[in-house]
Length: 356
Image (tube, rainbow, N blue to C red; front, side, top):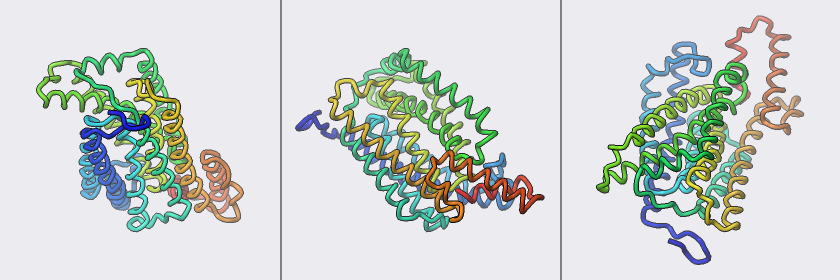
């Protein structure tokens, strides 16, 4: 239903989707903190953290509390996709940044400075711009229609590129730089996440149609989407654990959100043709919203890098996050080799983690 001036009026289903997405963000944001406390306890008890290959967190009750909290949030998010389009639901995940950053500040003592708060505000503002100008969702009557959209050449090309990129990140970059560059683990989560959302959207729509009286469970396409969701979520969970155990929560949350949101919107545009029929003004506004969100996350990242670097070495702070990480990592190696020649590899990893 269109509103005045071409703006989209919110339908009852869209309102339900938004409410569920907000609830989901609250649960997921809190789960980051609970899981990280569980990861810390497990690492302290076993001496081996998840970031360096440990899995002792599976025996830690607090980690499972966080996991259950996240599952509740994900279920709410899953249902939200059945009522509202991905480009409307996904950006609302920005609330989880605020929840996790504020809780990390008070509970984990991971200090969030004024510029960090500004970065969070920018993420929220950009997300709201995207929501305001989001397109209406097309009506889908069967999972067969979604299957046709998923097997378009353009979307199959996107899926192939995601699989190649994830494979390269997992088997080449992760062993080399996973412990020193936050983008590697979060990129794997985000790439797989973009595929899982498309499958969640398909599965959620199928279940919704089934509950309305049109059984979609008899189609093999429905069960294929179940398989894709399961595979993607398990991969995301594994690498999100690594990211949370290795880097600062206030950094992991916004970076994961921005990469996940950007890739999900891109996947939705390719698969569902969300921009088809939209005005140039609306498309431009959505792009500007994404730029604001990205800028806010970059501000958070650079701010944290600057705060962790000693003032005498702050010459590296204005550089890009990845270059800053590499240069400060090399500097740390030099200091360790010169002053702590017998430092173990584990000690070096822990010192690098403190820089984030």
